[in-house]
Length: 211
Picture 1 (cartoon, rainbow, N blue to C red):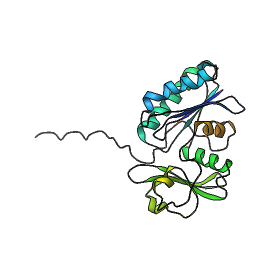
Picture 2: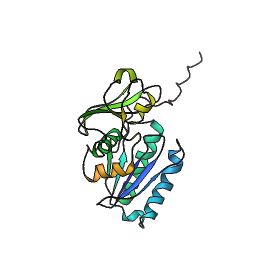
Picture 3: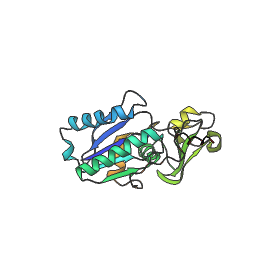
Picture 4: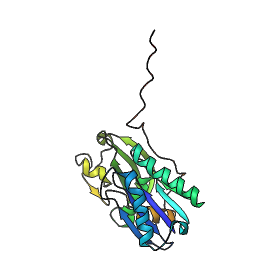
């Protein structure tokens, strides 16, 4: 039993894979509530499959790139569960999951981009050939990454002038994350976040001493 979840986008997605295919999947209803919704969604998918957490044999987690807070919630939860249950945890670049889903569904073939929302009027982007990443991920202005070719992900919907050919899924699916890990369809990473840039919130500088 492989538990998979991704918190790299505004919505949390959680799924359970039994070794053959996905048997349960849930997506949060409210955006930007990662800390509040991840644990209840994990409980929901395990209950729907009729198992308890002790039945899990591995964990898969999306490593981003994505916002600092969302990724931290997902990665910390994955590492904590894996440690408590003494099971392995595998991380995958979230853009890779989108690429595999798009390629397997027939939405793309050959060369294409995956672009997701990086906020600050930027996108997280990577290049793929037949579903396999060949460059990236990087954080770029849409105009810099612009292409007339097919683009998977929410970035293509947000910046249609730069990505006029949107295809495939817009946001990652935990079900596809589970399939990617179970079938080893992408590089399996250590459970560390792919931030690509500094977090939005940073500590204030130390006050200058008063002379």
